[in-house]
Length: 300
Image (cartoon, rainbow, N blue to C red):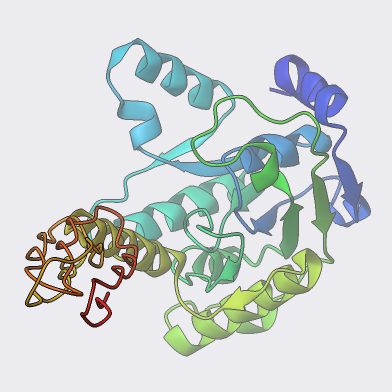
């Protein structure tokens, strides 16, 4: 990772780093970072001398096909650990077991407390299942990390990264939660520890904080997009009607244009009467008809 990708990443993107002195030269530590982009797991290890082991969703290791096999080989090669997210507490339990194992080897364990990438660049509520339980079970210090502008380097859905964007990494001072050691079964303590870490990440990143889980925010965004698509597919409004008939010959006047489902109005039959307007497709307003001899003005 560091030889094949680390040096090219640093040369191409020139990521800036603040607070790298807060990473211990040896011994276990937890790196708790915000999560803006898929590339976060590349930039952070690239700027550190030590190996960082992140947990990754199991789908990266089990996707079929040539692409899936290459992806699995890559993640195994850089030492990432698969986490099965099935079940109500599957991901949390897997994260705890994986994190404890890494820290017991005296290594750096990387985790994203939000549980998934931010859907809009804001910082979301941290999940206490993995981070806090690992910290309290091992006594390892928690080092808050803020990734800066990595979502601009490679936005979701974009294959080629933007070399014009220079991302940054801010590393905070280690947080000591040894005072809560052995209290990992207390949900209030877990919540308190997680919130303290998220507050430090917020200060480092400058992100707006949203007190809901990112997974819930993604559902809301998806539901809103679905509702908007359904409304758009329903079409425009009802077409306007043409001018009312008059008693004698008159000039033709255009009726109101309506939506895609509008119908033409009736033709004028007398003075001041106008021909009915045609159904519009854009919902714009028709023009008024002209005045016939001896008749009144045609209406819109």
